[in-house]
Length: 482
Ligand code: FAD
Image (tube, rainbow, N blue to C red; front, side, top):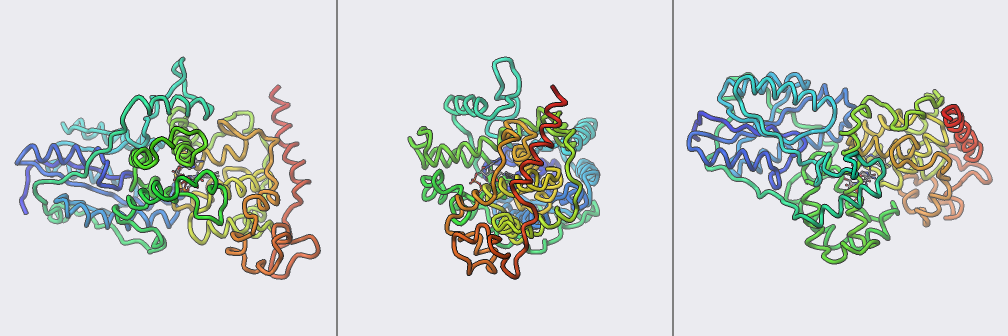
């Protein structure tokens, strides 16, 4: 293996893929253009920072597994990947400074939108540029990057529907470009460099994400199969947690094993004209991808969201209930409301929760227990394999009626009717709460009509009482605002 004097370094973060990776593509192209240069990919695990950000252990494991798998995949493309273990974001700047000393001429990476990540990248960019190194960031987290979908006055949209309309009109004006998988002319041996710089290799994970395959081709196949075989039924099936009606691609989108561009591209290819029919499965699925982008645009325009501020300032004054034991019961799925408890068990056992259930459980925490949405937001983050700040914050603030496009505060989900409607045969409940399986389909959604079945929990609150309390809490702040 050759030793090269100039390194084109790709710093992988939330773009753990080799197809449609602009940074990797441009770095390999530059390296291939110059016989004395090589491409080197780097990933730096930062578990201490991950912990500060409440990243779920399952998500951490998925990342570790994916990085190790990617090392093998990239080696087949003649690209070396240094998979490193550090602690915090500060360590990234030390490691990159070391690579600068070792011959890095250009750094390539994909932009991240969260505040601390932006601060980290700003510091690193300056540090490297001061040393004469070129830094190229690619804004590819969204199909339409933040700032590109704005109102006629140039403002950020605060409501989804007009955002989506503009987003779609832009989609039909242009072709979505996906970058091909790059290949280097020669594979360099990165080990001596790691030794010379005293770098540690990434640790293997704990295997808790083993149900999620990490080979890139398998993930691309999942996307293709979903678009070929399932998307047509998406609109009819997506709200029923007992069905396999959604793509379950969120974890891959969150770590960038898959890009949104690849999803839209594949959807356009497979769905054809159906994509333009308003209620087709394909167009409704596209809408969900647009929701993903909407929340990212909002985050970039309102970076204070990351400081735990509600989008609607008046709701900051709501006097949430400070009840740790109720919160614990919710986290553990012991509220006595079967659909809520089954959903929380799905989250705790698998690291993933169906979207309808995320809405029901979030609404229950905030509007039945009057507990601060930020507690729930953090708990979700600590468990979700697809945990992602913008979507999680957006989803929680939507449910709590504190966010953009929020559900009005007086619209409060009834967890029992939600259960009857979206899990009509109680198949989902029975899967996660087998102790209720002997009840009839009518009883199971509300098992307390006679006496609470043994082995199950009494209802933690009475929904209609709780509803009244919530309306009072909100009307206090809304009145004081007038
Ligand atoms: P599909 O229905 O197949 O949708 C395709 C993709 O679109 C998803 O993978 C996801 O990337 C995106 N998407 C779908 N719905 C939404 C939405 N409402 N908002 C933003 N993006 C969406 N999604 C996350 O990716 N990470 C989170 O941390 C997260 N937290 C949430 C918290 C709450 C309280 C709520 C109500 C929703 C949250 N969502 C989050 C959105 C949504 O629930 C998940 O994206 C979805 O359930 C993932 O399953 P899927 O991949 O099968 O989705």
